[in-house]
Image (cartoon, rainbow, N blue to C red; front, top):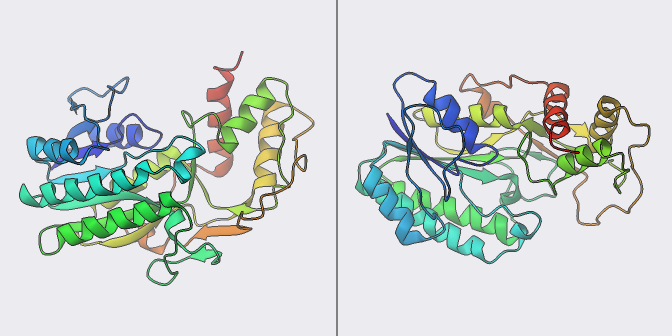
Length: 299
């Protein structure tokens, strides 16, 4: 098995590379624009700009992987939701998939997003909850997977792992959990909404192990949700981080909630659990590890 992992320096990708490198019988090729730090021994690094369809296809042809885990995408927060570069990423994913078929690849896993679903549905079930992405990001992810499926028809297996809310060390500092951690550790009170929204949160290492499980699960195709399957109020997340940081004021209710923010969005996880995967961290353990990571970086 020769596994190409894109986005190898990112929040999830670096863990996928590490897990795959530690498994027997997997030759790992890691790609990103810049070389990730602390690559495991034996991992091949192949730099590439995968937003360029020509360069993306050329990489696949040059490395000739049997399996692909495609994680790389534009993720600059919060502009990635509306960024027109999403269309280029979708085109590049299709080009990679065509090249993958040409070199005789077996299984292509794209990291998708819950943003592809219709968010008027509180529980997202693969094959039942309709797709209705409300943002260019979600639309491009959906288009990318359609192109991958079309390229794979009769040639290779195509699967999309739809991520819900992933957090952990190395996440963009402007996102919610890092923002809360950094504020508490700096002795500041963040300006948070009510926190009444319920979300499905998963620690990054567990998301990575789910992605690798999908890469190894021959025969499982189509959309597979990646989440904990459990709901938690964001207010409870803030309260737990405040407790761990030793602060009295969480900052909840200091700004109005966004009107377009869904009150509840949870993943059905029967399909990913069918692979034998399950999380290794509780929510509390993941939050504690994340806070400790930021504690080392906040003066």
